[in-house]
Length: 141
Picture 1 (cartoon, one colour):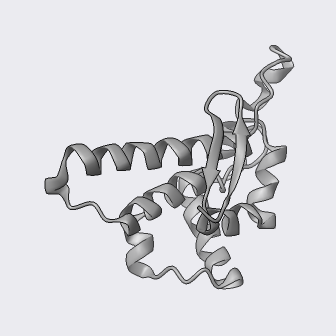
Picture 2 (picture 1 turned 120 degrees about the vertical axis):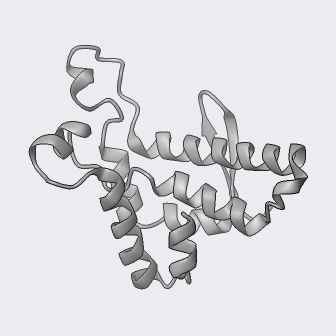
């Protein structure tokens, strides 16, 4: 592996491959470090402070594990490494569209949901950073 390992208190060291690092290392993804996973819950439960950033990395890791398990245990699905990577990316970016205070932002500030905003933000990132994903990739994600 030519990537990095990021330590997670739940999963231990998570291997992060270059195609994910290129997304993680953007301003758009780094802003997730400032967004609380549980919205305003930390005002009542001060230790509930994990972020969308660490959540997204964990979800991406679990998505890869799931896809690798499906590939191994259900070979008739003909899952490719490219499909695994696209699912892994979809999991990584699924919260890009979140605003402050989590789902309260969806309900009271905007008329769209964060999933829709996430893919739209990623499409803009794809152009800005020349990631090279195409319409078929976005449809699959």
